[in-house]
Amino acid sequence: MEYEKKEVVVTPQKFSWKEKKRFSRYEDASSLKSSLLKEGYKKVKIRRCGPEGSQFKVVVGTEVKTNKKGKNNAN
Image (cartoon, rainbow, N blue to C red):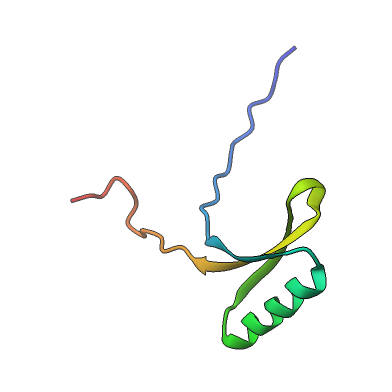
């Protein structure tokens, strides 16, 4: 039995996600998300966390700067 080798495509990380605050109710997290979007944040998510997904955390994404030249061009 032969296995086919699949080419692995690597996608670089585009955003760095930082936690702002945790809530026990989704409505509270949603109100913080809407206020952060009004303040000018572009990437805001609400994620489940805690034991059995009983809490909600609001995370904000900032763009990761990438090196256009590549890692091997240190000179």
